[in-house]
Image 1: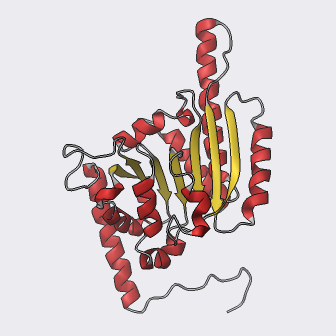
Image 2: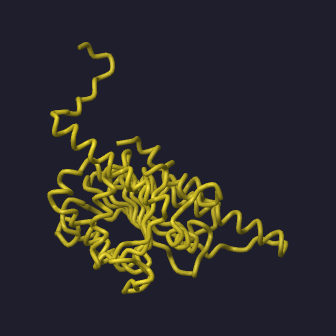
Image 3: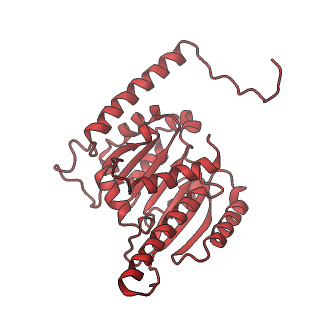
Length: 287
């Protein structure tokens, strides 16, 4: 798993790249994110982000910095037009969930540090330690009680570098956590999944064919290291929105998906041939 600082930078880069016309993002997913305070828009209500496996809280740091930056740019535009700074209506709240409950105290420390650094920021920023989360169990399992309570109120779910390390258990459970998350998340919900290798995304795409997932669109970023999804903004996807319950997928992303399928098959052949991942060597240790 990458370092925590890399995890924070990875999500922050995603937010920043949405302003760059050289990057191509799924249309409806981008539309949804542009309507959030993270990119400077607000309907007056608080925007809710949940970070799965997110201890000690770097996903919150990324979201808070992006929101603060957009708020600052908005205030500068207002100052040019009116001659005075206006107060921001942007509100962001993040909840951090993790299998390791020991992250709780560190999340509180991270929130305090972030608030201190961004103390002059005008958006309303807040973050809580939500409790335990186990992505290998049903989202309605007792170990995911804190998570299931957030299904009706969360706008953006982020899960970075937790899928691969739990791949076997996820496959054994038929991806029940994510299947139920996609099914029961509120309409219009956005998802960001990040991994070091994209060979697991074909299995996620297969489970999205379930009509109950009601997913509107899926796409990839960073050459497949990020999978971006948006749930339909209505309860039922019409025939024009999808074909046989398949979420919309651009031609570019379809070609990437085909490549990821080949990568998965290649990896499976290596495993069948007896390949095993070596344990990392300790620095300075002799053979």
